[in-house]
Length: 177
Image (cartoon, rainbow, N blue to C red; front, side, top):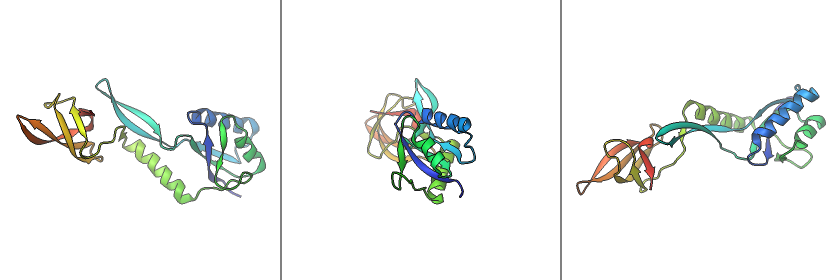
């Protein structure tokens, strides 16, 4: 048998503690040949706090983790009996089913994409009202016309001297009203 990836359901907010507990138990029990990586799928997001761009991590499946393991009685019991673990996703209660390699690759690609190019924490939609908080149009209200997530730019219609004027602004220069 070889190691496969399984989805583990943990109490939300306890994923890091569960990961650390499982990794300690693997070392303590000497089961590193049966249990491999424990992964919490996260992506980097950029948010604006006090006028500064801050990068933070966000779980994109809160409460869920991936574990690479060979499914045997000792490995299954070690993981299942860890505090704050609710159980495995998929299969039956006694025999969880692994996820496909395609699903694993998709999740890994999303994690890597988030590491390479952090996403904005706030999502904008055309038609939304925003307030410009930085730049030459500071304190102006506007309406989002289009959103470019690749470049982190918004096309906004701003009312200047009684006329709407299209301007291009970075996500960090605006906030939702």
